[in-house]
Image (tube, rainbow, N blue to C red):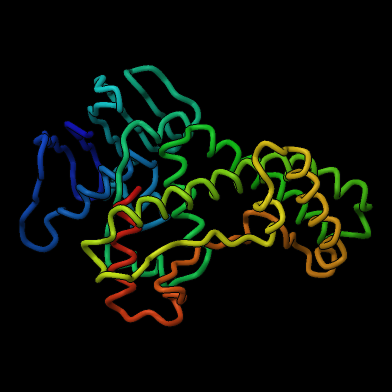
Amino acid sequence: MLNQIRLTDFRNYGSCRIDFHSGMNCFTGQNGQGKTNLLEAVYYLSLLRSFRTSRLADLILWKKDGFVISGQARDGAGQSVDLAVAQGLERKLLINHNPVYRASDFINQFVCVTFIPQDLELIQGEAQLRRRFLDIAISQSSPGFLRHLQAFGNALKSRNAMLRNPDKYPRAMITAYDHQMIREGIAVELARKEFARDINQSLAEKSTGLLTANRRLEVRYLSRLGNLLQCSEEEPDKIEAAYRLGLEKSYERDCRYGNTAIGPHRADLSCILDNSLLNRYGSQGECRMASLKMNTIR
């Protein structure tokens, strides 16, 4: 839980301090006063990103060189923790006034969930938005997950770069990245699979207030590594073999298109209402209800 937040040169705030009550906190004011900016700062302190923009310059007060967001929270054990992020030419992170050098060690200090109009895209938008939702949610509860995701992304980027130059890189050199992709990709896939299972358990327990009797809302994690996801987690050799077989079967196709078709970067999380895909057959109201529920069960 966040108890206090302090802003310096963030958006329209030159200097600001807010102390939060333990219950519900509401912010009122006229348009343009900075209500959303304050919520954005809370989100940034939790996840080191904005829910509104990917441009760092948008977050800095006009004619300033950077911003600082700091605050005090309580972790799951009820212990007080001081957090700070200073963003200029370089980013500096502090936990209890001690430097932290990896984002994955910083972002899970307190959980922050947004619900904004754009969240409807979680149901109706592209698969990459749902993968992002999964990865952010899992990173908040599993500190090691982000490192697996980043390592997989680095291996994937290198493999794809070589696939686009097959005359320069022989197959043995390209597939040398398969081992790292398999190791890190399995960790990502299994974590997402487990999280989808947790979502469904929560939906089964808590959706009665949003749905009429006998209606069922669920999610399905879809991956081209279907055989991998059918393996038991106690069978690591079978899991690795399933992933490696998928990469081998897809190799000719990958060379032709210059990218890797198999892996967690191509997965999706489908929202299902009464066995029908919401993004195809759901009404606007049903999609909004599902988006709200997905954002509040994390």
